[in-house]
Length: 397
Image (cartoon, rainbow, N blue to C red):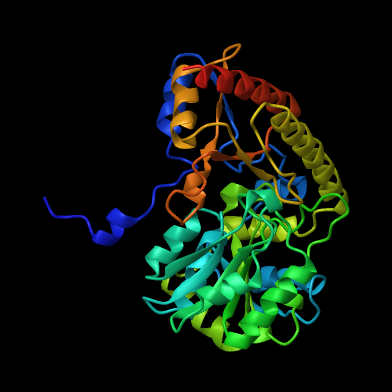
């Protein structure tokens, strides 16, 4: 039998999905699994997008331009211009999800062997995108006790060497829900300018900011316009994960021209997804007001519930719909498997993502889990009750 490539063997497994077989086995025994492991919201997709799909009148499902339909990019330009003045449709490339946007961005900016600094814990698939591009991730530790605030800028400087080409942040963060302040982003601007690095920001959760806090986009950082690259997606904004439509946004003309060559190689982003996403731009503000209100209620129920359990600590997220909690266990990978295999309360159990998979540093996050508060409040309450009882039983072993 031919050998699998070293790259394939080294590709990390998803901490979000690796426990699926255990969840499926639990379901086969009649146990209801409360899924807090994955960011798949139960929020309804905007009717305006669904209606556009239902009423498509096409004779041929054609390729679009490799950068995406011009009408959609112009619609996106209007959207981004409200965030940062002067963005044009030529500063935007539509991609097959935010994943492809980041993969194209890495391949456009970096050579094999180059390095990118990412505060950890971070979205686990960043590791996969970097590996596929031959890029080495240099993690920089952010502490749960600070709520996962930006690490001191001096720590970034310690990581910079001749191979360093960029910094990547997620704002608000997945898996932490941390929302970076304008002051923190200005600190990053200084070091990006000093070393002439690329600054990537995954801003897919920008609509979901709480407690009166506002999202500040890196597109507004003056003086480093050609260093800034934004990755975006409709998946979470409009609860349209299956549309698989994202975007790259940058004022750097050379970057956009080069990224388009990768887009041409894959021909075009999905036609139906673009049609739905263009329609979604007409979503009324009331939709986001209602969704934010619901997420705040879910967040407060889950976080307060977690912190009421002996030995559990969970900082309150400022955005997105994720939280990282510290549990009174030594190995959350083992615990997350055990709770699916060997525990139920009132016919229910909980599926979580072990946080170790969101760290690049070996041994970090071993007593932490990521939870996504994307389910109705009754299920979140049941999940807290189940977790409380499970921890008690687990620690009695």
